[in-house]
Image 1 (cartoon, rainbow, N blue to C red):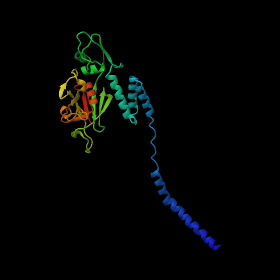
Image 2 (cartoon, rainbow, N blue to C red; image 1 turned 90 degrees about the horizontal axis):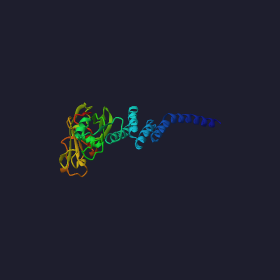
Image 3 (cartoon, rainbow, N blue to C red; image 1 turned 60 degrees about the vertical axis):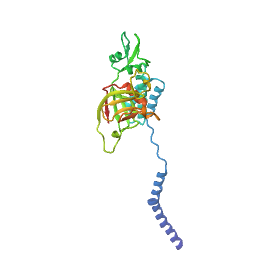
Length: 282
């Protein structure tokens, strides 16, 4: 009996010690390793995404005016949404489809062509450009007909060039209109680790179109295939068409220092911007 008692007492002592050793030292390590091995906890669903889906559905249905209002409202209400970039891209596409086509819109005005009107004269009267009038009305040439209806849209454009986001944002009356990705920065504007860069203000100086190394204007034959420069007053900020892959360097016009964007973006911006439009580099 005495031996049995000693054996039971030893089991109790060592068992208790083992229990506390496991609880204090072994168990925390096991639980920590289990947490490390567990798959990451999925982030909670973004509650704004169903709203964005409704906006995109309007765009897909071709309800451009309704889609524009819905997307603008989405950007105003949900500036922290994970769908922010997708909403901006969609709104940019909707805005240009409305602006650069004869799609009726509440802000558009109708100009009736009169005797003696020519495209440049109408452009001056409506405070726009001849090229923009052609694009916005799907004109195939510069000739006008008496009684012809031309759509004109308010255009008060400005540009914000962001090095941090590597995007060029086009604003109309201070509101987001469209954004364009930068393809390549000049060395003088590439990001450094020296801290924030002071903003620089400037303006559009000139728009140049090139075709086979020669300057052309919008009414010239072959203009649709031209590449574009948009000269800005801020140093190193000339916007220019990135040359197509495999293009002959002898036929590509490139500024000494500038910001490369896609040919489509350069052509679109060249059509909408005018000399004197404000520009900010940040």
